[in-house]
Image 1 (cartoon, rainbow, N blue to C red):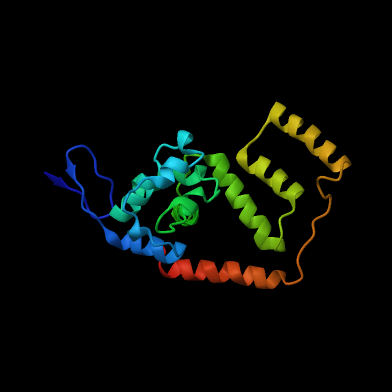
Image 2 (spheres, rainbow, N blue to C red):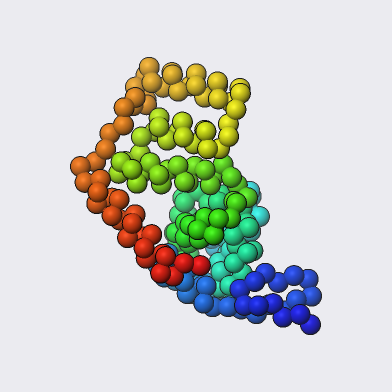
Length: 202
C-alpha cells in the first residue's frame, strides 16, 4: 500500500496520512479555530454559493485539517467564496471560512499557483493593489486594471466602456482617485502582514 508524504493529496489506493502542521499554520494566519470543526455541515447547508463549488465548505475545512494542500489550492471553492460570512453565523464554533479562504488564496499566490478561477484571482490582486497604493479603492482605476489583467477583449470591453461612461455622467464613478491621510500607515500594515507571512510561508 502506498503511503503519501504528509500534506500531499491521496490518490486511489493510497493511504491518507494527516498532517496537522499546515492546519496550525492556517489557524495562525487566519485567526480561526479550524481544528474545532467537527463536520456538522451547517456551513455548507447555508452557503449561498455551494451550488457552484467543487468542494463544499465543510469539506474544505476537513482537507485543511488533514493537510491536503494541493486538494485545497486546486479547488474553485477558495476563489468562489463571496465572504458573506453566512458560514460564520451558522458555525457552532464560530469558524469564519471566508477568513480561512483569504489565507488559502494568499498561500496559493505566494507559491505562484494559477487559480482555477483566473478572473477572480485577477480581481483579488487588483483590489489589494488599489488598497495598498492609496489606502482606498478607486473604482475606475481598479476596473480598468482588472479588465486588462483578466484579459477582457472586444465586445465585452466596449460594452463595459459604455456602461462606465454612463456611470461617470451620473456621478456613480469618480474620475480622479482620492486617498486617505495616512497612506503610509496602510502600506506599513501590508508590509507587516507580508513580513509575518514570510516567516511561516508555506
